[in-house]
Amino acid sequence: MSAGLRQLRGIAWTAVAVLTILPACATSSGREVPAVIVDPTPASRAALRLAVQRALHSDPILLADNALTHSNLLPIERVRRRDPQGRPLNGLDVGGRPELFHLVKSAEDCVLIHDDTEQLRQVLAATKCSPVPPKK
Image 1 (cartoon, rainbow, N blue to C red):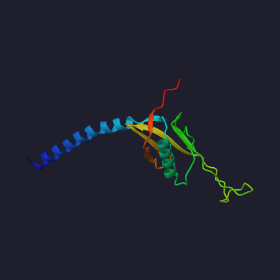
Image 2 (image 1 turned 90 degrees about the horizontal axis):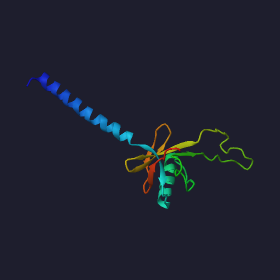
Image 3 (image 1 turned 135 degrees about the horizontal axis):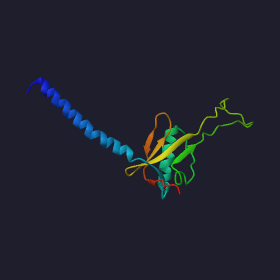
Image 4 (image 1 turned 135 degrees about the vertical axis):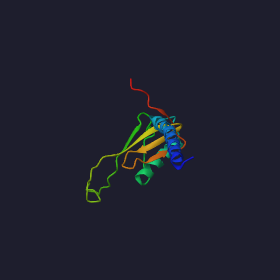
């Protein structure tokens, strides 16, 4: 077999491999759906708190026991520390938007996504979730 024919054959096999893999990639990302936590437990609440703390590089935070059970969105307002007169301790009041997280179901996993520039994704251990029910 000539070198040109071998090269052409190699290109053809590469094209077949790419065309086989691409639909699988599209299918896997298509399976992610907005989700809510069902049957929350102390372990699932702890997993959620830890995931948010990691994403925000923060000290322990408080979340409502029903966080992500009615909606797949979780906004987190940063607490601005103030002096006794109510002035911001850092001298600035930057305002800013809340940090936003959303929950998706990906295959059997519940994945918390931080909607920042890096789109940090964390699988929540010990957590059951189901797709967001359609609105009535």
